[in-house]
Length: 366
Image (tube, rainbow, N blue to C red):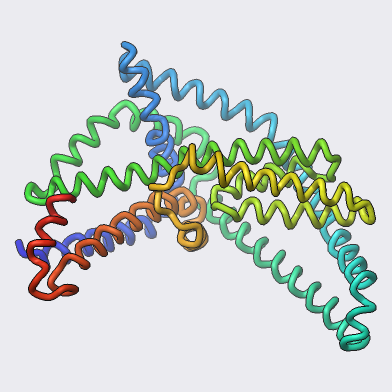
């Protein structure tokens, strides 16, 4: 089989896989969530095996503990979070109005000198329209995700089917990996294994590492803002921590929300406003210099813009399933794209006839 036919075959396979996922997106959520859960917990099962616990027993213990922790967290945190979110949404219009008033009071004289009262009115109208459009877009995006989640099998299927799927996947994980490995083309098996290891390293390094970063930052922001006495501090802090899964997005979102609330709540006390700012500055410093280098590392290769695009694109196409698939698919595509670029730079297409030896070396390294 020529290289052109192999490329055509794999492109066709990817297209068929994409069409299958899109067609079956209404029933995929519990299965994709179970697969993701098994993938994340597989290293723990391997460690338990090494200390003498059988694979079946290790999988059962891990899943039972995970489900118990998940249920306890759901019972305790979800009601509290729902109350805070509801109260924040109710007060959001008044916060926006107050911020506009403060902007008009503090910046009004300068704007009147520059452009008169008309410029001030235009500024207020533009800010109000921008905020309204942003809230409407975010609400419609959340509604599309929620409707997509409802169109699947619902919360009941997620809570019941996902642990069962995760259990069976976790028990048979090593066997499945070995079987899939045996299906790889013999001549390209070493290359495929190398790419698969890079993809696994990227996914595992980012998901597990960034999840720890999110937990630590969310806890720090929530505690810090609550100590300051900021209204909705715990909700804003946890939201910033969750959104920190996309580097810089969580801190920036939390900073904007907390500073807006702080200005309305504490004005004209600049000490408390600066204290709110200090929480996020310190958190960003710790994330950039300690947490991300230690927990995530530099070899992941997931650019924040690419990750943001993947989350929005797959979320819009597949709902909650898309959000689960976005990170592994983005990591896999990134690894494959880097490999393809490496092959191209060593090919005659890029260097002409002098590239044969270099391409052979690249193949050997891969």
